[in-house]
Length: 452
Image (cartoon, rainbow, N blue to C red; front, top):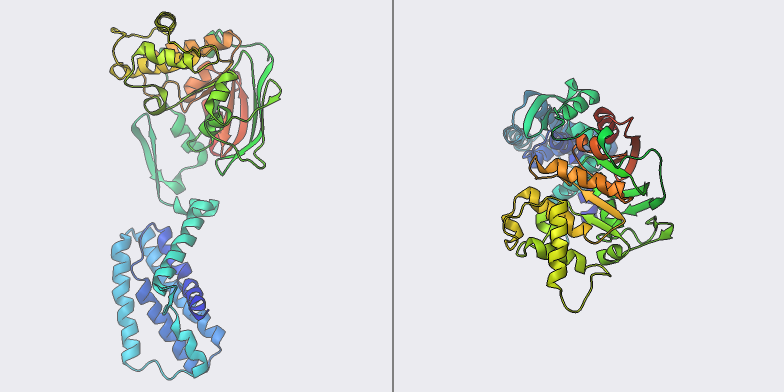
């Protein structure tokens, strides 16, 4: 028990000082020596008859002061933490050595001597200093990453905004407002040759039709938190948000790729019927398909041909299951979808990895649409495809809505969502934070809702 108490005291003495240095985004090399001076001063005060609590408070203040010096030098003078704390280490070590060798520390009463054991001993065979540093690292990590205050403090330096692979601006965080950050993030030039106008979309609706899918308070760990929304037949619903907002995860929960929480995980209804899928095959049987954002990992069989990949998608459905494979059916399905999606395959016997990124994506789309789904979820449908393929994929999305399908499009490209979606949902921190109609949505509004 004594070692645990010593460990707790060590954490208390080092906590705030080390925290300031870690906030300065560096490694503190002076913590061991920094313990010596507060200890020496506290011991001398105890020997002089001062109250124990006062001695501890003074020692704590000295330790905090040393940490503040390190933190201020690192943060404002901008000397690297390695050099700052290394210099402080030798300086403080010299001061402590002088205090001890020159007799500054006098006799300490026996009843107070137990407080001199801070940082000594071991717990379960692990030296106390190692446990001290592990405890401090865990506490600081939780504070910096798990609290809004910590994340704000950590972002005290410069902010660099990248857009379309280029650096837009680098300025001090104090000089940028949230509105300015949003403006820099969405200030891209988008031409109509890449993204058509929303008014030209043939799948747009004057009013909503039948509710096909309803998500109510769905929760999955710390990623999806009480997310709720509805999807209607004949409309395209866009889903915007930052990375980690839970967009992909909620889509995978719907499609049976992931599992929502068993207790208090919420409900998902397909045409009024509650559903919970254990595997994607069950979702496919019910007419729900999820088109992955990473086609090379989860989208196709790279050693197979275009025809084989499309045919495999059909075999996964109830109607497509058969004991003997049909070459005629495979060829017919492939011909239909190659023509419909304009898949450029010079040699249909070539492996899919030999196609361009845009044609690979079209095959992934065809492999899912050949299953004749009622709910289609596109996750980053135009990521990594050539410019000429983007309008073709957008047309396929609009055609699905025009056929009465319920379509969800997850995309990080706001112009893409604005060009194809009838409604846009904005996800933030695992929840739907805002909903916009196609007429009301703008890039500024969407980005503002995504980060505020």
